[in-house]
Image (tube, rainbow, N blue to C red; front, side, top):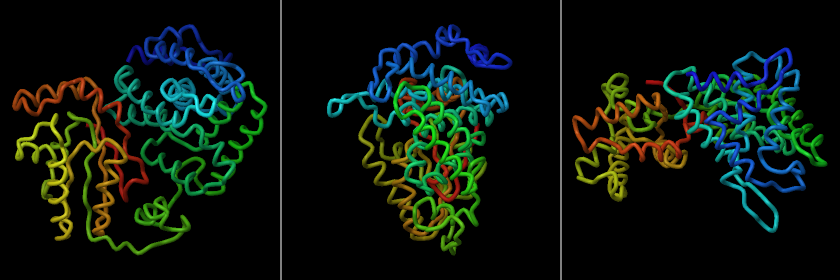
Length: 394
């Protein structure tokens, strides 16, 4: 896409490794973020440089000066630099005064949501495995950019292995990249603790190498053991557990218009389906009404299959970790193995499919504004959420 390439041409490249800041700040996708960050102050104790955009530019310059950054393949440099450019965008929404100090709690997660919507809608980074991988590598780096500093202090091995597992789905993601971003974040400030925080990130890099998850996910003896360890039910990642599950429940996940029904027909033709859309039609409840009765009926049907040890498909949008967790906990309580399948398509293609679906049945059309709102909420499933997790493009 032209706008995407225009932005990437402003990113630092050899031999001079200069950033084209004028082009970056003029780019229509970055302009509104830059304006928002300029207007967002920071605690002067930790950020003597001032506002978030000033800090962001300092982080990007610190990153582009690193030999480790310059040695990366071009695609990974683009992913990492874009993550640096947007790493603190969440502070626009999250900054507040607490106990007389400026703070921005959970700004990494908020920034990941903001970046995902920007990359998906405005830069067309959705609908193919390559674009999905690029986008979610950037979003994962943004979400966890503070973690190497904390992990380097408390040596939380399980958390580090859990974050590294993101590389099974966003295949470009590496703890080594995350530590580079975290070091640049520490150095791109005016504060007394820049060296200390950079050292913590460097220690996390050493810890990840010792654990075998610096350049890729940690290896486990089985998906069952991996799920148990990441949930905190297995003490050591090298441990083994007997898999006492009887069969698999498939939990679908994705925006409206991504082809979940078609996917189920093609990949699980013999399995019964608990479909929230179908239950809504049966109960004559519109998507705008209270969904409590629909959810209750769906879970009761699921329990019937679980009691009978009958594998089935749960077909709903399932866009947030909280919604997915309620269902995976139910399924696993009955000793079922869970596979989460996340589907996505390009933004324009998804809207087209949604309109076409409405031609056959107007009640099945989801207003475009509603799709925008659910994209804002979307968090693709992470590796630790189930025994098996798949991301697919349709």
